[in-house]
Image 1 (cartoon, one colour):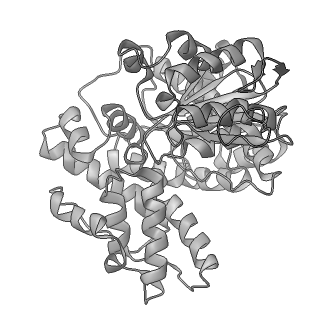
Image 2 (tube, one colour):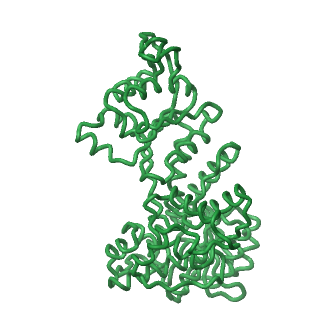
Image 3 (cartoon, rainbow, N blue to C red):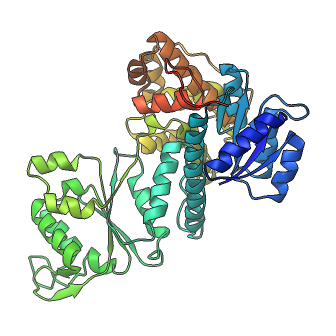
Length: 463
């Protein structure tokens, strides 16, 4: 990667530059923040590593100015003052990470490795979104969480291929939306995208829908009918809730995937088909295999690239950006002048666990837009399920005043919720995760993001 080191201390600057070049990076350096920004305007830089306490522009100002020049550039700040509150302010300003002196070189190398992966992931995701924007019929995916960025990155990498994709996630997380995204970013984007809900049709209807039938094949078959495989030829066939597909149809589906041919019901003629198959399920297919309800060979055929979409409660950064997108959508559709959510409504939306996931959030916002008599949605406009959730939550969290932009307020609220839960359970991450309705990994990721201390101590080489 191309790195820029900004440090007013020459010995520290030269030592750090030498180490970074030794581990394979291209490095330029500057002794002040202003000179660093001037060099940034003329160079292609991926990551800036800057001291915090410097004459002239300090680290916070460097972060702000770098983000104005190019928001994709990642900034790592280094300081001798290991203040957690300072670290939080730095991260809120847009810094990628935060290190204290003496610099743990092993830790810095790990951070840079992660930054390199994120940089290339961001580039791939940018190209992926641009491809989606080219299709006017596709509503762009809205997300702010690292979990969904990882999902989109996986979509970006598999879109150009033909391998089968299995999308796994709870009901309402947006599995079909992800399937459509893969299709519209693929070379098949100008061909049909055909969706089949396997749980909505009985065995005989499903077979006819998939493979078609000839005239007179069964009672009521008054005309020949082309199945979904034929209609989707050249494009993508999406099987939603594949776990509900009857075993008899699974056999025929497996043959179609293996041999790329089908037979209509009532016919022996083979029809060549070229489709990419994407499947989705909220069920554990391996459990269904053990129960003899799903074929193991079909599972291996469709599970070439698994994509797991986490539930909304585990990616709370997405809640308000989704809510705002739904607000804009339904305000326009219903010709309502609704400007946003008030602080109490925001807090309720952030605390609720959404058993129905994104679909439930969308329905709640649509309802609120229709019912509100104010320019801003209030708690009374939200469904009872969300209103009643406050009585089932004993977090005792602080209500935030409206004193900043919504993403900043969301981050403050999330941090307060996490700190409160950790304090309540004496730092027990598992119990805090259970109370917040998120995974332990989500707790660890957030603690790392906000530099919330743990009992671990860093070891290794230092500068």
